[in-house]
Length: 474
Ligand code: NAD
Image (tube, rainbow, N blue to C red; front, side):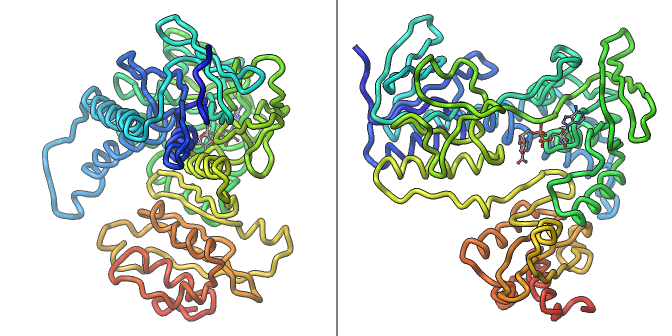
């Protein structure tokens, strides 16, 4: 006999737990299947984001930022002290406690919303049946009117750099027992930059090898340029156009063979090597024969605009489908699908998903870049404003970076906002909101912003679109 549900969600990460809780709020009988275990060996909901992604990396980013500021910023404030020291075990334990608090929080939310959690590996069978191989060795069979696949993603492993003690992925880089003297990173993407920054701030020599010739190619070119300059100042050695061909673990460290941008053969020797070259949909073993769900060439579950797969009543959301691999994109898809199942008009606006890189300074953007607008032939006006002219930013000793607002040249509608600087992970939402409400640069310019606040950079950038910024010469 199968246990019968209205909705079964496979995956308890950001996309899955949002789907499960929203469906339960809407009166559905919901089960959520998740295989993950925490560091203590007990089931831990929340997926990559809560266990080994967004939340733990932000904990370490914050710890390492405090440490870095002691050595680099405090003297400006007239604060002096004995040499700062870092207790890595204590820093990691703090991170683990935060993870435990939040994974436990999802379990509590499931309980409060009457979502039944099954801990084990779920596989979709034909006919919207899900089998769960539970951690105690037993298998249960569940059945539902709708199944939502939210299986997430896994780190891509390079064939010549197998993960182990010295060659690590994001999970390993969150749990190093000590600061490595030399840390190599393959990939100057989001994970490489964030976790590279953590260990750099704590004292590691960090070298990042990036395959592409351009730095942060997805970001607006001016933003990438300023970010690259600031990261270089911090001592991050980012080498572009590098093709890594081999790695070898030897007594003196990991030897990384690569060809540099000029085509010359090089070897980098490091104590730890973080491989952060992207992630792929975690669909292995997820689908039994004959489910009708199809996969793309890249292994992603093929869905339509409403996240419905090729199989009736089977949906897929989050990292295992097309689109950016971002927790908040998964949140929105999970909610939208739960609402569609309940007969409500669930919807995700993919044009207003913010991107954030939690480096120092932070990088954030929403909408199209100047390069995209140019290549699409869209007439636009740009207005930008530097944090160096914002009183609050200077008072905080965080003058690096700027805000840029891009608006349609004829309608003035905001098409993009690009930011690099302190706290821009928060400020970018001014752009998200304006775009979501189809607002104009003039709307933003006429909204009263608190003084002194970092948000004044957004205000003046919006005014600069029409060459009327007050605090700079237009
Ligand atoms: P990514 O796609 O952000 O970056 C991977 C980088 O590796 C790219 O710049 C790519 O050109 C480079 N690369 C690929 N193959 C290479 C090779 N053989 N040699 C050298 N360079 C190579 O991927 P990521 O940093 O691994 O992150 C994975 C996913 O997780 C991303 O989709 C990211 O958006 C998401 N994530 C997001 C956040 C955030 O939003 N702050 C944080 C962490 C991870």
